[in-house]
Length: 67
Image (cartoon, rainbow, N blue to C red; front, side, top):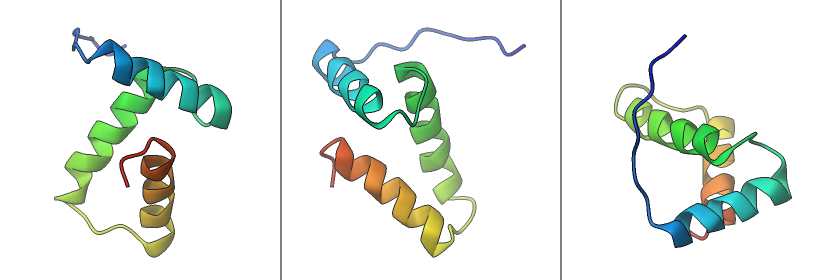
């Protein structure tokens, strides 16, 4: 099992993410979503996404109001 550490984000952002994941059903928790986004951001510098993968990431970011 992986070891975890605490990371603080603004409560307003947490609530916005929570609302979006509850509506979409794509993630089980805010933590799962945050891990996904951070891993995706780090992988961007390491590998190229397929058009389909890139569109999925963009859709999720749009849903959260980032794009």
